[in-house]
Image (cartoon, rainbow, N blue to C red; front, side, top):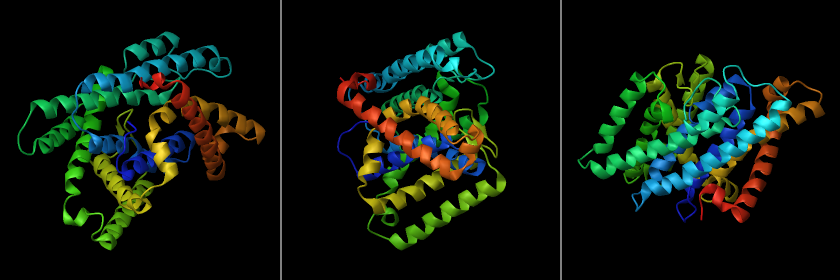
Length: 334
């Protein structure tokens, strides 16, 4: 999430990822949702694995850049939701105000958790994932240690079915993508993955993988949700589908080189992720009232969905610009 100079492909991927996060939260088209959810959150762990490097005070810096925004935006979202939004809509079943408040300081995927801002689960999960990997890679040194961690974490993701506080159980599902990003970073040095070699072969492979995965998802109705640990055909197939799509998108986005829009969205993906959810809920309701349509109809329509997506992106980006200019401390930047 830092802003220092790096290869454009990383921010291109994160920029596309945040667009898909918002789209996935807006649409109620099951095929589109299933295709997006198979890879949009894994993509952020994968890219972060590629960007990982050890540095002084790593854990403290991660706490400042992830858990501080988590606490601040959790409190802001909770206050808005409890004092304003709940006057116009009902809570989801399975939670109450006290439960929701406790869940901020004792992060766990309880039923109906984070109703005030559903994306908040990602930050504590991301924090424990990066910290665990940091401790592992700085304390354990042997050949192919990342491969060993990948295999162990995949096994734990398959075997662990109980919910562990602080998103430890969800972390087991996230670590394989983080490690895969590290491994792919090394793989890029091989001739086949070189940016200037085998372009036509890689494009054919990427196209095949993308079409095959999405065709399978649509035909099978495969459902995936990292937050809720839902993998209708098992975690292993989810993992392979997600990695295949991420690799394909990586290869496609190399062609873009620098996309100013995706670059900016990627560099500011954390703030956009944190602010878009309450905005989305307001806009969907207003939009349905303006067009005298039901909320479900608006969210199932491709045209209405993409119009709302653009509006949410514009408003979220404007708020992010203001935060970057006048309140960077909210994002742990001092």
